[in-house]
Amino acid sequence: MGREIAVTFDYRCPFAYNGHAAVVAAVRGGADLDVRYSAFSLDQVHAEEGEPPVWEREPGAWGTGVLALLYGIAVRDVFPEQFLDAHLALFAARHDKGLKLGREDVLRDAVTSIGLDADAVADEVWSGRPLATLATEHTEAVTRWGVWGVPTFIEGEDAAFVRFMERGRVDDLERMLDLLEWSRLNEFKRPRVPR
Image 1 (tube, rainbow, N blue to C red):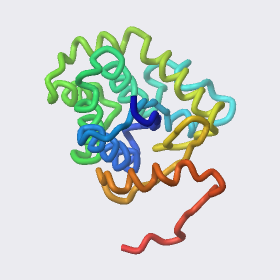
Image 2: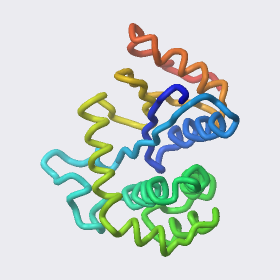
Image 3: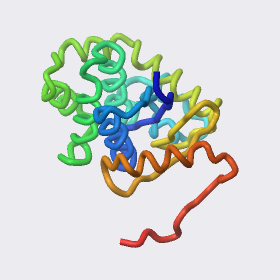
Image 4: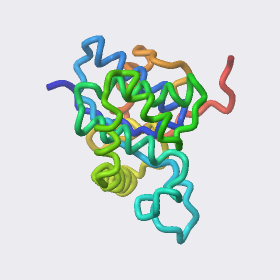
């Protein structure tokens, strides 16, 4: 077994897409990584104080990203051999195609585009299991590691929120993983990103 890491995702975040594309490229390239892809709801992070958690609301009140997370969780947990393709297709629907992730037809098209049966995925989505999983994963990320955004990379008890500026760069991922173990560095943030 390789180096065990987890990385949080919400399909609405372009930086999560950049980071996850790098992770997928590394895994497909033979990197010695055992990756857990952990759902994290930006809708929940931005909920007003006193509001019920998104996973306790009716579907119409979930926000724009929850349904996409449920599709990702459903594929990850029931169709794991097709997860990486579906994961990238769900990110691409939003960030490459500019589609709305709150629309189920968009999500069904994304999973169909990689060869999955959209009805089978939707059946799992609406079973309630992915919603319960989202509640568990999001809550654990917040309470155990203090996660507040995506992508956050986690190894053991170390966690770091990272924004890669370019999509799919394995070399950026490798460099970040080297720094992840450097726990005396709390924050390194550029006031401006030279472009």
